[in-house]
Image (cartoon, rainbow, N blue to C red; front, side):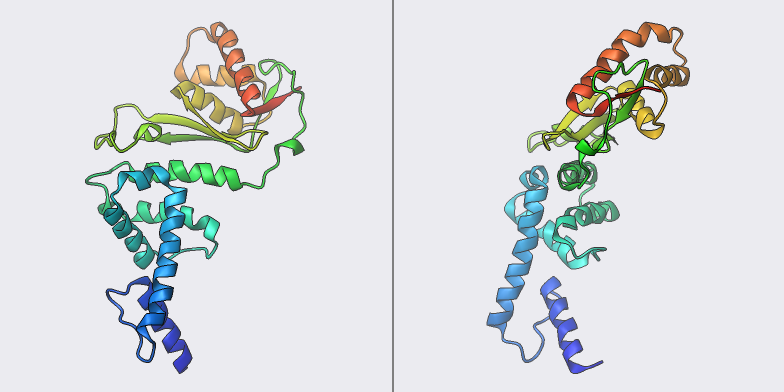
Length: 252
């Protein structure tokens, strides 16, 4: 290997993990320190901005330990700064031993926080989708926004804060709707399980009418009288249209 490549690899190894890898011979410590601190502090600041709830759960010292573990151990799949958040989520998913004893919810919380950034940066333009804003979502076909995600978690991640850090998951999962509206604002909504399933059906199988989706859901849960749910479901679908979760309803 050429000498220059050897120095570059040794230098990169030191920057990632200075406790294990000494400053390469011939490089001045004063100058190396500038790079070492600049790169690490940039990553620490970026992660703190992407995951503000997680950051508040940790003391300054413990936060830097977690960032250092990510910084030194994780092999990223992308060099793009705006995708570092997804790399951090992947790192937590692959290394539960780092946090699971005290914060078993951490990976789910990271995914929840990442979803906000991912939707904020998504290049999808809702104005490109044409539909009838005044259509009846029961008798016509509701169109799901590509910027609306149904997320399911074991822990109530939307409630976690420094004074609420559960170590045991509730008996029932948490269902959340995360979406970006036409004003480019990312919003959140807690969902009941049946509402989450209904929206998932609309997303998975575009085309059928709202009534068809309701009947499919009723069959799944063996509901004895699906017609009795029509008014409730119509109101729910209209609310989602108002929120831009559903863009509108098209004729089937």
